[in-house]
Length: 99
Picture 1 (cartoon, rainbow, N blue to C red):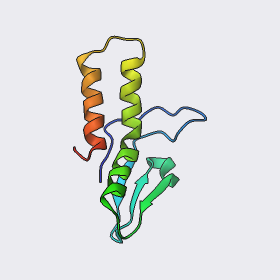
Picture 2 (cartoon, rainbow, N blue to C red; picture 1 turned 60 degrees about the vertical axis):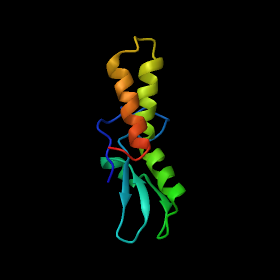
Picture 3 (cartoon, rainbow, N blue to C red; picture 1 turned 135 degrees about the vertical axis):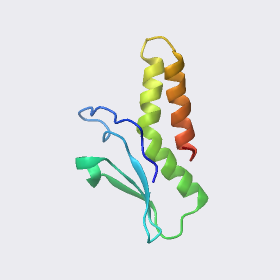
């Protein structure tokens, strides 16, 4: 399972807050689940026979909250600090299947 390191704050009328987790069930189903009470937010990306592209799509979907937060941090008008660039690099690594 791939887990986000920090939770994004909820924004009314927007996407479900992160972290979103990539879950591979015993049946082979690959899904992206929301956290805690938002766990009902489950997107089944592929069933028993996942193609490599579907698995890559699932990783990208699961990393979306981190990617959005990192991009917003860089574009938010503040300084482009080392920590903000590091957050973006970590989110991109996660989207690509790295830890």
